[in-house]
Length: 604
Image 1 (cartoon, rainbow, N blue to C red):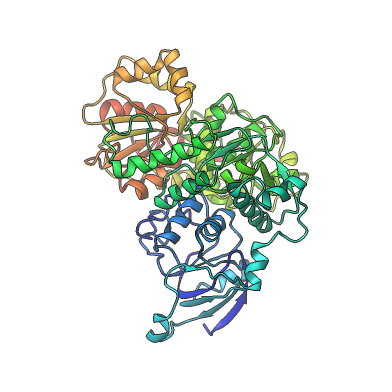
Image 2: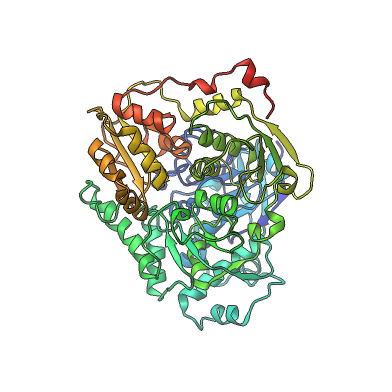
């Protein structure tokens, strides 16, 4: 290609240049990039094994976890990140990681969005220069070694005299209507913590195109996950500034079982800061709920309530199943809104942004077990990208809350969409026309059993039949799931070479104990861990000698190969229970997923 320049929108301050690393597949930084090395560890991603450090990284957008912002900030501050980020479309989670690094720590990472047509032109470029005004200059070859030596190799320290472009990015968004209290917070009258929090909220409001802020009634914080020293530094800085939340606030899973991490053999080098991070948010006034399934708590929001929830599976459940109104809030923005009580009026806070744009016709296989819903969620998420779907074909399926929890968690892993609709099952989809807002879908997909077989093999990819660990509870188990597992295991013997570990919230554990289910699970030998979840668990909870994991979670089946380096089998809860007893994985495909003329020709 010849040298060319394209004009994008600068989402953050700064400029940089470097070798271009391009992919047309969205990437989750959480579970997709190792913060200590800059390696892409998502083993399903085309860039798997590549190093982003020192590169201009070009991806369409992020996807999956809200913790992507924390991982991006981590690699910015430890020098393992890209020198610039070029996106097809503005991504709030990734932009926020760079914004916090800039506003709180003074480290600038240029982030630019360029649009679909311009993004495609990056494919064949070898070198990119990202300028402060959002212009991206491309070349098909790198400059001479002497020029490369002068290239920015890490996020730069911000100067004390910002440019006009920086001032435009950092100022109050044009047309923004601030209340008297907003202005008071922004002026610092309610303390430094709320002042900086409001600055970050307004930066995101600019990115989202919001012209006003709204009150929220509760918050759920995902930023309590320990991704490295930077995440703890951020929370401790807020505490030092006197931070206190303004609305009732719950906490997501943290990175250790706070009460048992020493007994579990966790290295204090990790356990102490991970526990301290959770405590820092408690010190800000949050409840020590420590669950990735806040919708299981008595404090779950009501339909129509405006909330600020982070944690990707919780966001899609709140929007889709509960009918509450929340954006897919990134780590750090969640606590900023909790501190101010104010959120940008944008995204799914606006009724018009909650309609589906895609219609997906899906099969309801006869005899399908509970593995169907996480499998379907994972596959549908791959089809959707950032767009909200409405699913047709499950009207007679009688989905339970656990089914939708499993579907939503997997959907949120493979997509960047904030919600979904299922006709006849979710509150805003009594029929497809209502879910679509009376408009024709932008695109219609028909999912076949063959499609689902392909996604099954992505999730269940291990050729090894022997299983060393059964991993359950991602997201955290509900009381009904605990009861179902207890019934499956009661009176049976655990295979001596196969461990079973279950993660769940403190509240649900006490409910299951009162029901008698915990006694059954403990008698079988299930290791019950609270406070943390599988996306944070590593050695020694994941045994060092373990090579193969079995799980019923579509979310964990996707993330585990990159996070743990282990092979994975995926299947139903009953299949996991059988594996815990036999030590052997079930056949690759369940009977209900095998094609037959009847199922393939049946209408959705």
